[in-house]
Length: 271
Ligand SMILES: [Cu+2]
Picture 1 (cartoon, rainbow, N blue to C red):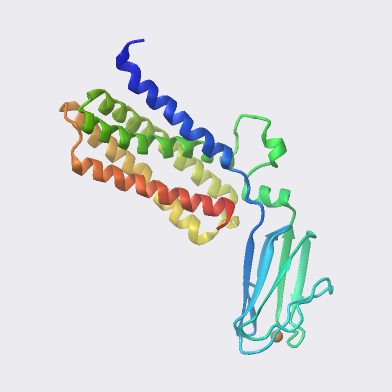
Picture 2: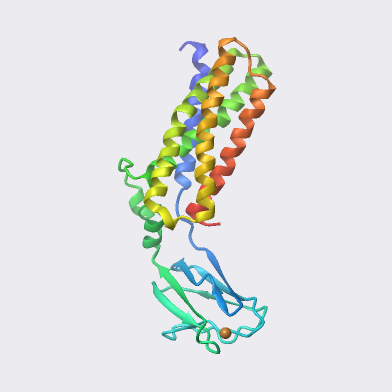
């Protein structure tokens, strides 16, 4: 093999190695804790939706003693004094109306869904057993996380390659960075499009505050990639190594990607 191709091959293998473990880790979180605050004679939120086996904590921030009592008597906290909490773990799927015994007009709802139902709602696909069978991705819930891996792997490696290129004064490393930036700029609009498609199908199931930041940051990143690749193209055409200004801009986009990934993770797996 021509030794000039070495860095390209290395970059390609590295990109694949970075993408594979991320894809493998995308399994639903096992159990979570949800918080319901009792304040001003209300349960907040009035409806809480949990997975079988999840923990729900009711925290009394009111000045009165309240209870968490199932309408069908399947659970009852007993008196919860101001400042105290009560915690329940729910193992039976169903919709449970509940109220406060001393204040029956304080009513709220607990929805317990099976693990499978929760996965379907969140779009994380079928259970682990079935997910080992590979079928071509066809829904945005499958396509978006796959494309994200390429976007997330390519730009940090392009930055690293450019930095190493400056350190070792190797044009081949800068060339690798150029190609990775180009691929990232080409793939990221597809990643963003799959994200918007997902949002269009999942809509109100996604946490409103997180998805709003996620969708616009993602769209901004896709545009920034185009700017970055044009800038990188001009540097390459001049035959220069990218200067500190470009590297700082690239770092900013990498950090935005990291934050973007953490938002996506929060929506998929909870906190
Ligand atoms: Cu009460």
